[in-house]
Length: 195
Image (cartoon, rainbow, N blue to C red):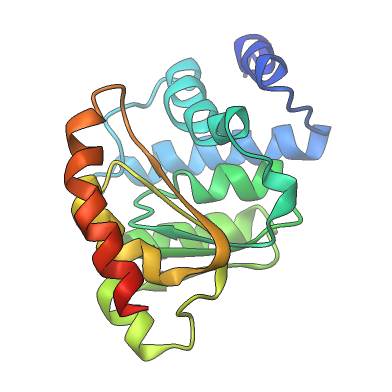
């Protein structure tokens, strides 16, 4: 694998990885492509594209947020592990919960976690609205992230209850988010009132 472009993008984010972390990203990529051959995880499978559109995009949170200030993170609707797994690889101090409603994806995530020897990361099969009722995870997490899951108003209702007081909910959204922000204001107020 050629890490040139990946390293350049990481440098621009101010992220510096060890050789082990680069190996973990490479193994993650290899498993993603292997599993993608028999289940739909992503339409992006070229190395440089996966690095840019999945790994770097997941890590781009550092442009707006100091990830060293958090410990417990939940990734709602994680899919193939984005952004939760790249965050865990790059910032090993994090305790990460990966939540997804499809059990096949949880099987993939558990395989990645095992193959990469990642600690303090769990993959949970469930829906956000159910998992919070089944566990004592209400207002538990320092940070809740979600990428490409739903509109912001719906996402806010599911995610905000997981965030502790003074914690953060950071959805990964495109530049076209303005309308969603307006619609989400009511959902956030509702979620805060329910908490």
